[in-house]
Image (cartoon, rainbow, N blue to C red):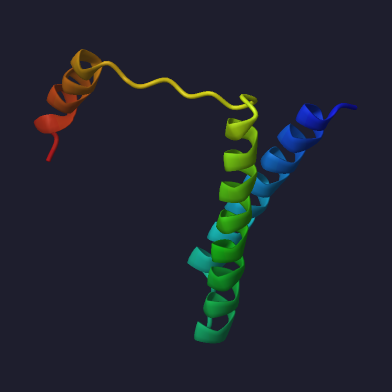
Length: 82
């Protein structure tokens, strides 16, 4: 297993953890539990961001800019649904 594969696995696992903490935060029945899940979510999002930036710096996670025409098309599509 190479470094890229390890980083991809870390990123996917961290994203899964963020999803679990998000649902824990939303479904919390007490303020104490809510704050605990919320802090764990915030910490996990920070870790996810660090992993992403390290992968992007190595060229292992590339993104594309959306074309302005496509952005406008989606905006127009949903503009009437408010």
